[in-house]
Length: 447
Image (tube, rainbow, N blue to C red; front, side, top):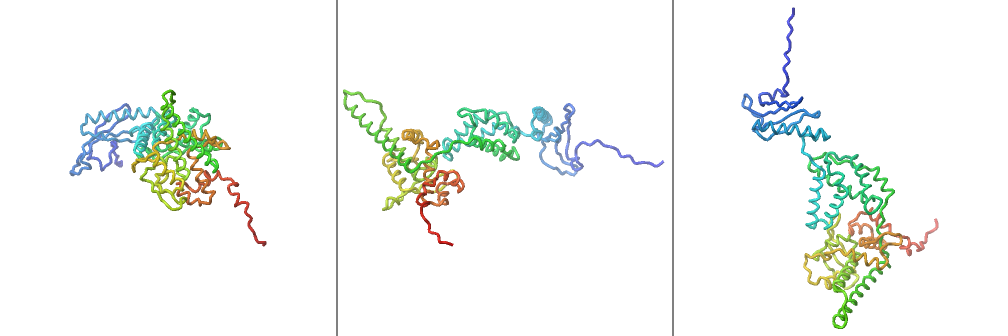
């Protein structure tokens, strides 16, 4: 008979040939699974892979081999750490945590959101952002995002999950029966900025896609009301109403003084000195906005040191150079002559002792402007569009376009793209604004 060489089957222990002799091992039986602890040591030749003598734990769970350092060279301590590590992963697996996240630290979306909100708060407090930047984002998150995602891990948020949130969000209405497309876009911006932070930290490999099908449906059926502008005659009426309100406040103040001097008559109310200053403050605010085209919140960031008054013998050539911290970029803009006189009046009557670092408009007079518009019957346009302080920016751009100013100049002055001017601001233009150009007869030679 011929002898056959039988190959002895040696149970494999998971180590490669190169690693044998370089590690010592200890196995821990956990039900039907085994946790292997190993520690690197010197081989027979004295070579060592690492100088660390810490124990490492390794196991196979959820279709994947997982490994973790115990950060200790004591075997007893390492065994306890390995058992807790395995138990925690097993609990996560039962809770439905994705298998690729079992051996990683948990990252709740809410915790990441609070970290992002802290950055927003610092930006508001330091002046890098508007003072209401943190407040607005915090309210949106606490009311409309946190209640849905509070128990979600950032790794679990995908497009189907966003779609579920969007459907849930439609039921969370307070003021209006419909969820406006613009409102939803702002809240998606918050969600994706939080996810971007998770991406930057390495918690996720990418951001999910936005569910566009429902967004497009909402965008085509639920449109927010447009912001109105002012015609030239309406702007003149604003100034007339503003001046009359200032005169009324001064007259009331004079009557009040007379009543106080006459001991036989009783005075009324008080604080009319402040009313006069507030209405003058609002008047200067309106004129500067209408003669610069800046955004209202941009104007509120301007300090006295940011303004250069350019004088000239011709009053209509007098203007301001104003450094603006803008929405998209910082820039130096050029005002019309009206802003020159408004700023001079502001410094003379409101803040004669101002310092270079003082804001020219430390408070936003939006309530006073709303009262002025209501009093003048100008709160809404003939089309029902609501008007506010940003309507003065629309008025500036529309007036410049009507006067023939190239759009390229306005993109730099107003920090806005060419397309936005065409689609958003130029929609206010009407053919009657170009009456003279349109009725002009052009003599064309016969062919």
